[in-house]
Image (cartoon, rainbow, N blue to C red; front, top):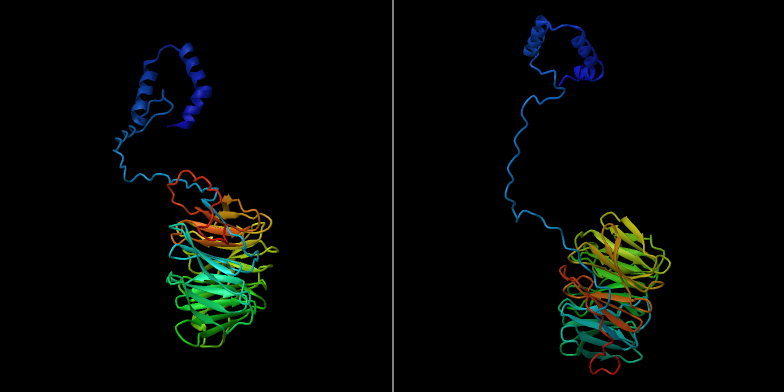
Length: 409
């Protein structure tokens, strides 16, 4: 408690004290003086360090509240192999088309040349919905309506057919509006949006006879990507002109050309992959083709680029997880794989391999857990967004034929 005195006593003081004790006889007056100093200053100078007060008694250990203890989050293991592989001969190897869509009724539609097949993921049964003529085909795009019953089919001759899948019956053909193949389709409630190689985007209201209600002009080449935001207000479009446009339907005027909200020119290759973020409504992810290979994130309120990641491979599709902050991308040349990313760090969580050539199309199951990818004339089902308590991946299933269909092995 008196560090100056302690230092003196440790170094020189004890020598003098011992010398005095050895040379001087015992003096009662000096001893009385020392005792008086102790009483006045209240310290025992024979101790260098001392507690001024007793240390506090230790607190008793409380009974742990098991409910309040936060257990570490279980690590989800992503299966590295496909759960199911289906042969799809005749799958057109064209990056700019959209030939795969998994509807909310858990039925997957895939177009092989002139034919559209429906594969029920619950029963694993297959139905041939329609085969168009050579003058109309091949089929260039498919898209399920939100009612899980109707499906739109884009054709090479610039027409669009709408089919009732339950009755296997065509209910309408849209003949007006486009002059080239229909490579992309997107539904917004009762509005069917069509993108064509003629560079135009048309909103079609299927409830009325004159179905063209809005036309978007801004792309210079083929429109190969279309995605409506979950709110139905914003439309993102990507094209072979390396452009991304954001359209605000609230700004649209009836049956007229509408000005875009944002024109994004940062990609250096065709943009087909588009995905709206489910947990941040104002954010869009886009992926570029062979000469770009980047995934970019956009704030659509300002048009600013939030981040850009070079994947090293052609980006063909993007899908967000509905349960975790994760993003899945599918790739063409040179890697021909699928990559699961952790957002926003964009650290690779898993790489899914198996396709022998570029992955062209990808679609998500209605429960959000599985993903279908198509390329190299195969269709693969991946449990990439599976339940967190799944500890081990399932074994890969050998090639399984579509039932009773001669054109799909």
